[in-house]
Structure formats: C-alpha cells, structure tokens
Image (cartoon, rainbow, N blue to C red; front, side, top):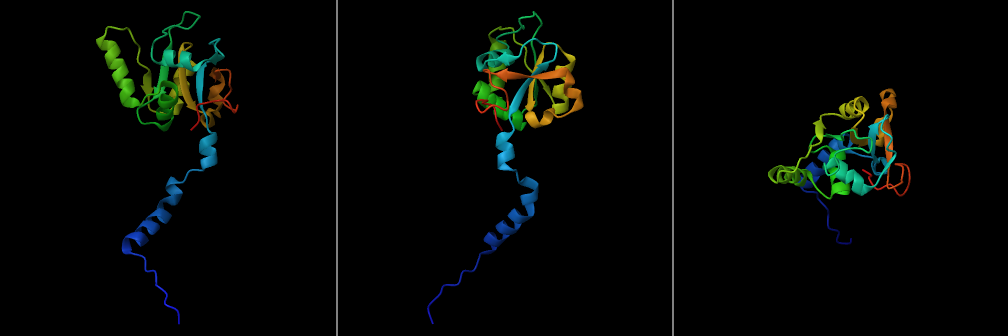
Length: 173
C-alpha cells in the first residue's frame, strides 16, 4: 500500500468555502456585462452639444468652464460619494477620487475662485430627472440605466467622437 497523505480541510477553510457559496448569488457580477456597461454622459435634449472631449468634460464638471456655447450656465449633476459610477467617472475623467474632488473644491473656494460644485443626488433616476428638467444640466449614468421612457428629454453625448457602443469609448465599468 502506498503512503498517501490525507487532506483534511481546516475549519477555517471549510467555513470560508461555505460562506463563499452562500454569498455568491448576492455578490456575483457577470464580468462581461460589467465590462460592457459604459458610463454615458447625458445632457438635456435642448442642449445642442453632441460631442465633448475628455478635457472639455473635465472642465465642465470642475467648473473651469461655467457656460455652454449657448450662454446657459453649466449645471453638473452626479451621484453621491461612493457610487460605483461616480468612482469610475472621477478616476477616468479627472484622475481623482472623492477625497481629491473635495480638496479641489475646497482649494478653489480658499483661493477665491468662483466654482459651482456638482449637484449630488441619491439615485440615477434623480440624475436623469434633473438633466431632463434643466437645459444647462450635464450628468452621467450607466448605459444600462437609460432604458426608460422618461429618457426622451435627455440625450447621450459622444466623448472624443466615440459613442458608448464604440470600441474607442473610454468610460466603462
């Protein structure tokens, strides 16, 4: 008879496997769907803008460019701190996190720069509603959150000439 080592799992290993199996339906994310869900920039349907560069987008949200070409005031809207869409948008577009964004606006206030902080809201529905109700508003949501009849008052803006469904589009979950 050959000498075989028996593998006896430790209590911690078994507990970890049981917990992972129990929680997997709650925390699983389809990686293909997550990677394919772009964050789209939206404006009011009355806004003539159809395309923005990443630099313009950054300036609009950071209040470096306070008015649209139409003369309307820019009114940025975003989900509150910690929302996955916001975390990604800040990282990709601004190269910042929530703390960096707060520091940016505190420093601007301290230096006497006239800045308008983005309006923070608690849901994607509120982002869409605010953008739809204000011709100067700009916001961002997941592409998958646009499939709603009330979205007829907003439109998606191309970024650097790319639509959210294009391979060159750079803001993906």
